[in-house]
Image 1 (cartoon, rainbow, N blue to C red):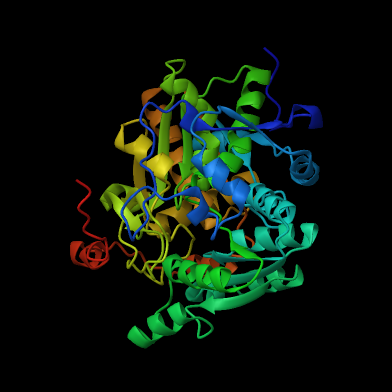
Image 2: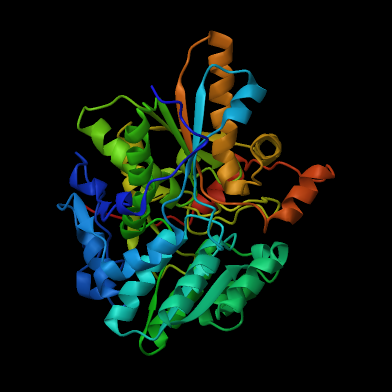
Length: 457
């Protein structure tokens, strides 16, 4: 067999022309979103007051396995795709492992992450609908940066509510968003009713994605010709991100690579869901037995310590109710957490698959994550995002197991972005001031108390 090159690139003609809709093959579909007023499944028209119309149609689509990518989006994708699947030869050598390690690298664009895949799609549909402005939230800043790039390309105004602690830790993200024309507010802010309410109740809050979502939705509902867009959790976002998994699968087939383990970091679910979707679809259909591992921060353990329940997507409790693994919309992650992955809930698609036993989830403390990130950077020459480094840690753990057992496995993980805007976190790790935080049961109960008690019988 031909030796696998360091970097596997598809040709432009091999970039997928369709997104993969895993809901079409899931045996148990995610539960429908509920109208919080009636507790009945929400109607499309109600959701279209918040989101772009075509995105709502995609959100409700449970039957079409493949959904065509419009030429206007493929035009954008040609600037940034395909992304490489890279064989981590140097990391393998450092770990002295018989395992083969590959990573799908989504950080080759200016935004530095996979988020641009969905940003381009969502802004394209907004433009097609005739909208003139969009609002959104961002945590670590990857989504806000990607969306600002897409809005500049398609000519749409953008307002971004950025989690306050992230805005303080990552001022250069704010600078990039503003360079592309976006307007940034640290959240919670005094520009919205939701923000003012949160600040009144907790003036010293460091913010959360739930807070930022509340502010962004409020503005979208009040502003003419405007809609809200988001970078994770929702089904249509997972759909757009499946271009990652499809490219990965095509590259594997091109070189005869048979993955035994696929690993991704988990925040809201867009990166992990997009990476595993086409492989998971085949597992559901009985065509493979791949081990899938999601990795989440120990400081925000939505999967491993959360509840599978209907919950609001935002702190202000303005969104539809979503059935997902959740820590409660009122959960505020520790401000010492240096990476993203701060959202209180997980994608309904991934929540259902996890609940049905199709993959496992592990947690990682941030000092261990940055230890793995530093090792990877020194071996592979790429400074990884803290989010992605959760997946790196577990990939290294699995490779070490192979060394200890002598078993040769093929491991693929998602390198969802770069860490060049996260240097303050790396400085904290390097100078020994980084600390770990694992919420106590009492801490989690504060968040759980915000989960609504519903009578759905």
